[in-house]
Length: 174
Image (tube, rainbow, N blue to C red; front, side):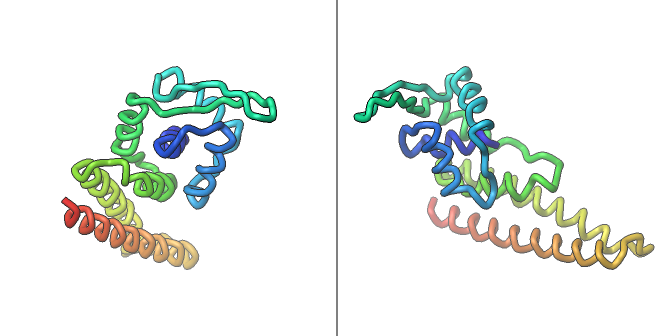
């Protein structure tokens, strides 16, 4: 998911590694906080895939800075990553879905429609799984599990409602 964050912030303007981390922090802190140690290899991978390019520039103070810029290949890769299938791991779903929805403005209307459908379908699947455990007539869960599962069902219900609102907004903007 770090590649999505990097490519998205580079859509706005060329940035140094420090500025990339700062922009990711400003825009995505509730979902992800990549360290410099994670950014550097991701930037290298994106450069190798020709998704980004870099150039060196000397500042007025005499410090050498490396600026990264997204390429046309990078824009295509960002869209591909935003539209790829979600993992079957519900633990990762909320953060990944939140990041992807935050980046939906770089997609066209039909791509956003696909993204919203994918997010909503996955959320409905995970909600149903939690609901099935709650509805188990044999009562294999304890009180604490029930409370947490109740909350999980509520979180998925709220998330689905948000996505439905985004779907309506997207349909109205066509």
